[in-house]
Amino acid sequence: MGKTFAEKILALKSGKDSVVAGEIVTVSPDIVMSHDNSAAIAKKFKQIGINKVKYPEKIVIPLDHCVPAATEKYATNHKEIREFVQEQKIENFYDINTGVCHQVLPEKGHILPGTLVLGADSHTTTYGAFGTFAAGIGRSEVASIWATDEIWLRVPETIKINIEGKIPSGIYPKDIILHIIGDVGADGALYKAVEFSGKVIWDMDIGGRMTLCNMAVEMGAKIGYVEPDERTMQWLAPRSNKKYEIIKSDLNAEFEKIIDYDISKLKPQIACPHTVDNVKPVSEVAGTKINQALIGTCTNGRLEDLKVASKILRGRKISNRVRLLVFPASMEVFAQAMELGILQILVKSGAVIMNPGCGPCLGAHEGALAPGEVCLSTANRNFKGRMGCKEAEIYLASPATVAISSLYGEITDVRGDLK
Amino acid sequence: MSIKGKVWKYGDDVNTDVIFPGKYTYTITDPQEMALHALEDLDSKFAKEVKKGDVIVAGRNFGCGSSREQAATCLKYAEVGAILAKSFSRIFFRNAINQGLPLVQCKEAVENVSSGETITIDFEKGELSCKKGIFKFPPLPESVLGILKDGGLIPHIKKILKIEEGE
Image 1 (cartoon, rainbow over the protein chains, first blue to last red):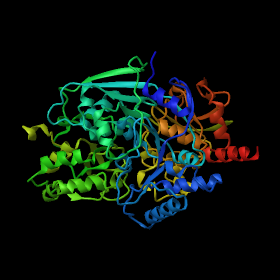
Image 2 (image 1 turned 30 degrees about the vertical axis):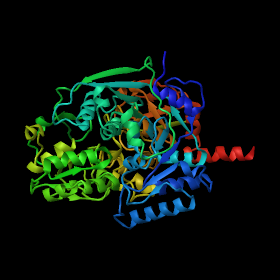
Image 3 (image 1 turned 45 degrees about the horizontal axis):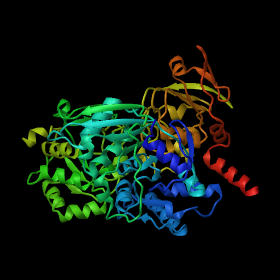
Image 4 (image 1 turned 45 degrees about the vertical axis):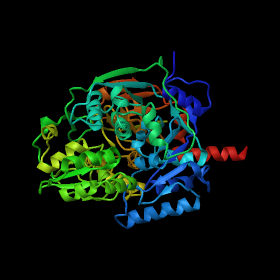
């Protein structure tokens, strides 16, 4: 019997000839990421009683969760991180003018196929889009990796998801992943590796693959994974000159389950309050009034997403009942969108362009909601209280659905607009 | 290692945002203060009334969502004795153990305990006693018990590194 990607890479990283799903292995990660939580991690690290991190070159720290600092508390948090980074000679530090961690790490060449990346953030699964084994861990675990360069991981079983068919007009990667999460449920892939495959994946741009892997954690997955192809290599070429090895599942690998989807007839999808797996076709909730619309976050703030929104919003005005906030995922995306005239189109339509960051997605700052308000967002979570107010409602959809809905002031099926 | 406490029972998919809201993740840094907001958006009575050793009982996928460790920290400092659920979200499972907060996965027990009753859990034996009887669960592995007994991952690593230094 052959081996899955997860089994192969965890054997490699634990120095074993072979491992099987279910086994516990001790591994050394290639990269360990933390963000605004790095000050809290540094405190835990110091509690261990060590002064120096073992491998500063493996540590990457972007500031993104509340940037620029909203209050004195946030400012102090950032200051402590900057001081720690200097003290520990951590070179891969990205200050508030860089972007959201899950966009910044790939852009800056830290994410390569066949590597092991752990991050103090649940959406670390995003990097699986590049054939990386990337999982979220907690703060204490990051502190202990800084000290020891080691962590235990359980080798996950793998669920393979084949996506076939011809993508209908008005359907985007976000609709596909929402449909899958709605189908398998919030714990449908608990502890598992999820390998995305099929013609739709091979035709999909890197941004779309990142959207899928980003949300794999919303079905409980430990990692998302897309086998690297020519597209992956082309995307990585200008960003890193490091050598890497592509690791793939064997053709005869033992998958726990294989799920096949044909998306040829898929309708635009939307996750309704207050769980990510409460997914319906947009048409079922069309007409629901919205107060705020948000395009951005680590799920859908890439150039591909802003392009889609600008095509819909070009030469039109958003409803005066709606605040449309746009957060490009990084400064690189911001600059490209500016050069291409995308930001101008969005601003003219009535959007507010924000600096790259996570702010409103976790209710930290910038675009918090009031009681009774409804937000339609391209983010990845709609839990009660997520955007700072437990009496507000959050719907999740594609950038196209958010753009068209902000024009009408209510949830709208984008297909009507594309005809 | 065993605990005795009152049951607080909830449903499936209790997520990290209702356990510890994201808006506090960088503004509240004192664990005692975190405890005052435990389960704030799920059950406003909980933080006020929870007693040392009480047990949270829930359905599937407890702790889903964010990797925020405070979701485990706030419950640990609210002096929750253990969490019993049908299943746990992966990162929450790790975070809880790393904070020294014991977890028990046992579907049958979840279905047989009621809110408000007092139950006893013996982690080494893998036994839970409640009104409806005794339920068995696989005891936690030695390595995990080691972290729990040391009070969490940081004190555990500290101990291990000290031992190595001494050799």
